Amino acid sequence: MFNHPSKSVEKVVLAYSGGLDTSVIVPWLKENYDCEVVCFTAGLGQGDELDGLEEKALASGASKIIIKDLEEEFASEYLIPLVRAGAIYERKYLLGTSVARPLTAKYLVEVAHQVGADAVAHGATGKGNDQVRFELTVMALDPRLKVIAPWREWKIRSREDALEYAAERGIPVPNTLKSIYSRDHNLWHLSHEGGPLEETWGEPDESMFQISASPEDAPDKPEYVEIEFESGTPTKLNGDSVTPAQLIAKLNTIGGVHGIGRTDLVESRLVGMKSHGVYETPGGTILFAAHQALESLVLDKNTIQYKDVVALKYAELLYNGLWFTPLKEAIDAFMDNIQGPVTGTVRLKLYKGNIIPAGSKSPFSLYREDFATFGQEDVYDQSDAEGFIHLYGLPLKVRALNNLPVSGLNIPKPDYTRFKRD
Image (cartoon, rainbow, N blue to C red; front, side):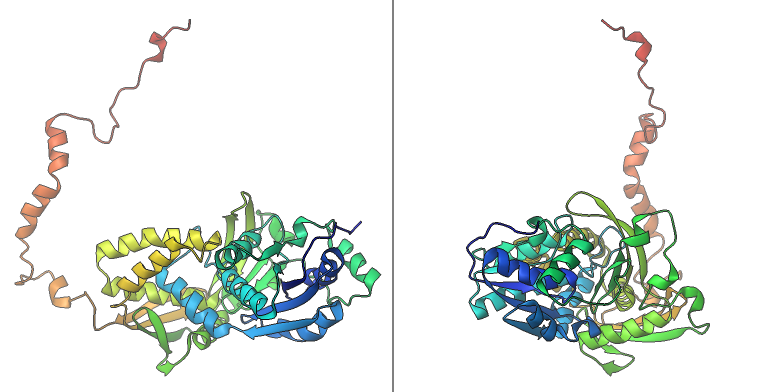
């Protein structure tokens, strides 16, 4: 039932989580590819999910496991650029799973080089986005490596199949009860899919949430946070210098207490189907709000509007696994160019799921109170507005003088009764 024709691979590096799927993939690779299996795990802030991984991997038949702590690189080179770009997928999703995959796959390739492997493998299914994200990154960084995706090859189709496979070979598998939800956890977010969420008509059960309180149960007293930025990069929280990873972790704790960062979304997968997910991203939601508030203070109108257009493409590229591409690099260069003046401090009030602006300041602020007042000032003569309005509205005036209909509302429709069928 489970065998697959042998193929020529000597050593493979597996992206390993220690869960049921990857625990079964280790012996499956050895049996079906007759190869050595090295496991690799990227430490991206999963917490206690990393406990005991070496023991699990070796017991499953891996020759070794390499675990890399990548939290700071994840935060500074992936999450902060996400914030600076303002990239949000389909109006809501802060891309917590998407943004982790290129970093994981990058090191999957590096470890393959390090141990002399000729293939890499992952546990992503053939129905999701992650298979694309992993494999496009491998193609971009080393297309010579063979990519093995067991879910597209084997006949295992259920948890029961996987448990049977493991039991027949004496492979230890996680003995915790399987959650009814499929989850992905890292420094940036916690996602929930499956189970009751496969039905869109219904409110998620409160017991599902793990890192954020419900707004109803959040404290009755608001909490203020101050975030300081230098050229678009956050550097201080409440006056204290912090690394990007430290900042995000602290904001996750603070925001979670106040019910910040819950998102319920039916999203469009790259592979063509819709999926329903719920995301908890407390720290990221606060950072996005702070960064946008500062940009509104220091960036001009045209730059903000064009940046919003580019941000949509940036989010699409990231969601679709196109991190290591020329266009994404070009957009990063654009973002770097416009983030220079995004320097200053933003104060936010957190209260029962809400983020309320409470002040912003910057040495590069474009706001001047004396310019914005209604009084007669040297910089702005109100009488100048009359000529501006005449020129700005000239197209409307010309249309009216020609007796043309407004917005097409009065354009007559064709009389189809005049047309006869042959």
